[in-house]
Amino acid sequence: MAVYTRINSEDMAALVAEFGVGELVSAKGIAEGVSNSNWLVETRGTPDAGRFILTVYEERTDTRDLPFFLNLLDHLAAAGCPVPRTIHDRNGAAWRTIDTPQGEKMLALIEFLPGVSADDPSPAQAHAVGAALAQVHLAGHDFAQTRADGMGPDAWRGFVRDCAGRWGEIDPALEQVPELVDSAIARWPDALPVSTIHADLFPDNVLLVGNDVSGMIDFYFACTGPMAYDIAVTHAAWSFAPDGRSFDRSVGDALLAGYRSVRVPGEAERAALPALAQAGCLRFLLTRAFDRLNTPADALVTRKDPLAFLRRHEFYRRQGASIFDALD
Image 1 (cartoon, helix red, strand yellow):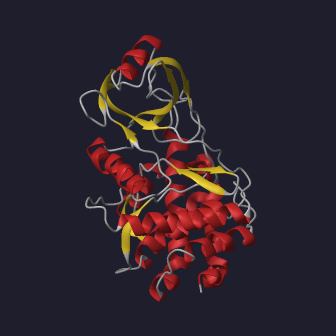
Image 2 (cartoon, rainbow, N blue to C red):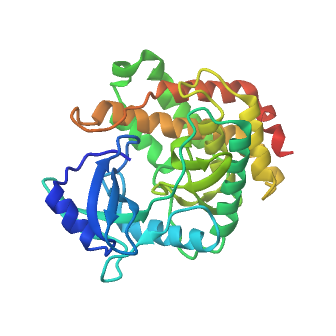
């Protein structure tokens, strides 16, 4: 959800026309996020016209995974989960290619869903998000395709190497990260129940109408993985102030209670949550640090602070299992 690739108005109109959703009215770049280039597109003139999200897939998204991502959206939507459907082009394809100065890139058009993201989520909203996450986990059991987590433990040491010698350019406190990563990998739990997980369910990836979830979006880190890890990542994403300096227990407990209202995690999953929460914090710390050091200066993108997740990591390390008592 950023804009790295530039598309002029004529090329944008031609692209949108290939999807049979009417004449292009406007296309506005979306600056939030860090992974792909996105536009809010509006069309008119046909029964299928409306508002859509056009995504161009950038370096971090392996386009070989597009069938997984896009088929997953259609699978979850068919199961009643609040996710957007994909828009297929005139030839029935769910994605197309575009030539850019950086080479050929792939793109897709996705249904736009109503709602707004919560800057300061309430317990009622967090409860709804927890329930929706559990719904995705249950529906994901029936999804035939699988995908390894490209941002999981196997990738973390690569980010450590990429940032080696440069942690201090961000903050000296990050010099401890390589040791923390080694510890998290050593403590990664085995044999937990798996499903298809979102793995990136931050507030800006959830649309709300009042206290109800109207849309869960940006599934481009979705993978086959431990459901408990997805719970831990979502808890870390929703329960803290954006800078990681304060924790809202009422929001965290509501999110866990909402999840439990749909699916009850097993004992092994609950026991693993403290370690998984710390691991999830490091995953986002690492990608934020990499982006801070490597994002082009002229990219239309919101750079995020890796220290916000170092603070979360320390909180989970101090608190231990008690912070997840709402799942009992």
